[in-house]
Amino acid sequence: MRVPLVQLMIAAAIVAAPAAAQNGAHADYVAHLAPMNVKASGHSSSALATFKIRGDSLTIDIAARGVAPDLAHLQHFHGFPDGHASVCPTSAQDKNGDGVVDLMETEATAGTTMVPFTADPVSMEIVVNTYPKASANGTYHYRKTVSLSALEAAFGTKYPGQKIALDHRVVFIHGVPASTKLPSTVASLGDIPAQVTIPIACGKIERVK
Ligand SMILES: [Cu+2]
Image 1 (cartoon, rainbow, N blue to C red):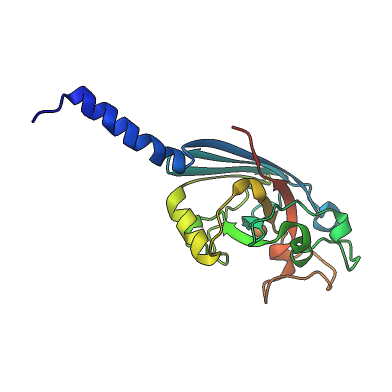
Image 2 (tube, protein in one colour; image 1 turned 45 degrees about the vertical axis):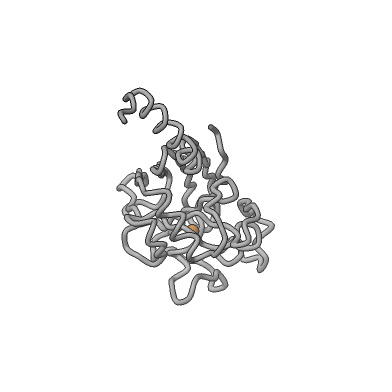
């Protein structure tokens, strides 16, 4: 029996629609990153981060300015593994009063380091050398498109039962030159120098479309 082509097309459209919706099909998120630790870092850094979901494509775009020049900057979204919403820390999170809100002190309001914005976010690898490097005038533009389903799968492996949930996360940019003098009380991750992980900008991700 021959089924007219137009009927096949209608049937295909009906089948395809829920699958696309499941993938979030079409959504835009934005984070306006404001400067942090300006005094200690000597830089007033800011950035605009956008996240565009089109079907299974997630395009991450981060344009930063005022960051330490000629330096690779760590950048990630941070969040809580139980899914509750993060907010950017304020100076109130400088619990030891050393004048710096260090990476460890951000955890109370922002949670933990989750997804890296590197050459390969889906790897979920945090300690890599593919973070963007700032130009001589302290700007950079990072842009990466990944498979949303692949990222969700990697995320769900690391945080079982959890979703990426962008609008519950915050974006951080980190890093000042190795030569920057910081108080010895500024904490970092493992044996990574505090100059590498010090947060210099933060912004909460909001859904805009
Ligand atoms: Cu981070």
